[in-house]
Image 1 (cartoon, rainbow, N blue to C red):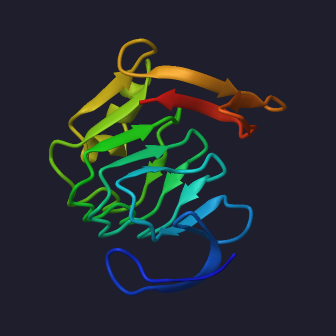
Image 2: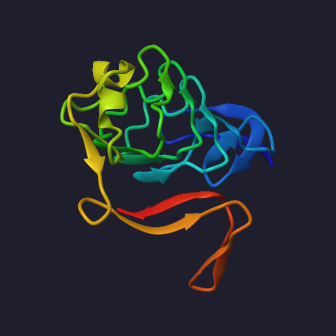
Length: 171
């Protein structure tokens, strides 16, 4: 909680709730404002329902992103000019709405992986404007589901308890 200054792609000063390189608009962590981390592989928290305008813009270190099933919208220019972003996993049953230029200027060979039997929803949405390679992840084929946590459940792995609702994949 506090102020974040600096980023891998230039000077930045923001006020918001800061955690692990993510800046949220408040402590509920439902609105991802901006990413100031330097990780190449990023998993967005299951608490996030919207990814803000310019959230990852010019993040040249970003190679892959996992978007949870809780995200329903991705803002304008959110991933614009992420020149190394080649792997996007969207766990949403319904494709999140995309703002303008959301995935502009990313590699032409970028792949979007979606849940089984959901690719037709993505290819018939605005996702098709940015990606020609939308593929399904089916259990036992591309990805293995290693935990699904329902409301009120807790999953224990390596001594840590996880209780955030969602489906977790070994990618």
